[in-house]
Amino acid sequence: MSKTEVSLDEIKRVRDEFFEKIRTILNTNDKKFLMGFVDNNPDWSLVRDNKIKNYPSIKWKMLNQEKMSKEKREKYIKNLKTFFQMI
Image 1 (cartoon, rainbow, N blue to C red):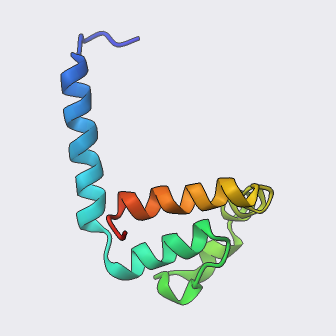
Image 2 (cartoon, rainbow, N blue to C red):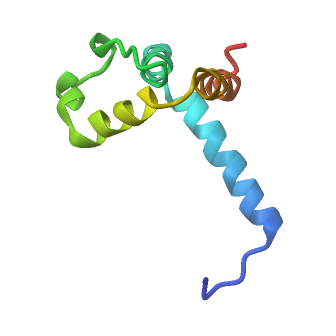
Image 3 (cartoon, rainbow, N blue to C red):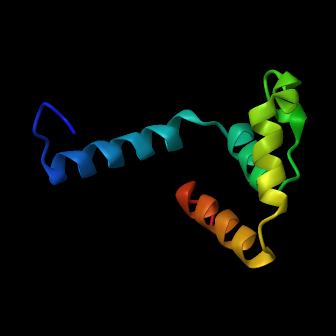
């Protein structure tokens, strides 16, 4: 619960600004890396610090993605492509 009242329109506006900021801040290599990552085939050479591949949270995420059904993973990838406006 918030101490300050916020309208639904304000929440939606901030969400849209946030998403647009993500789209503009990430460069092509960042987007390519993320696309490969959600497909469980990351190109670690696209990351500034490839030590992240050893982080427990990264390993856990990839393990969970492996357990996804093919259909669910395809939908996941399609949604990310749509978000990045790559299709």
